[in-house]
Length: 137
Image (cartoon, rainbow, N blue to C red; front, side, top):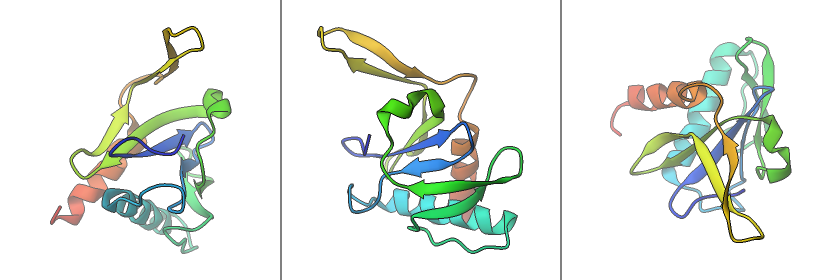
């Protein structure tokens, strides 16, 4: 899973790692860049290391406060059982949590592929708040 028609896709895995496709695989949108910058800044606040926004693997703090990787790589569909949260980014929506992904199966039927457990995406909310705090957006 790489991107939407006019949005970039991010997945938070159950281990707390944040995945998105590399800028070589997708159109590197401005909000995608901001999200990578904000997550790097959030990581620096919780860690002594200083990750780069486009790094292959950087350190971020998961919900338990322990380090977890932030990976700029494709989101693999076969790992769907490991997905905890999904959100998209775009200039018009900023950060938007995804509640459900429906796909067309080989029989031409629309079927549920993934559904968010629980409420609104907490990582998406945190990132949205940080983006809005930057102002000027």
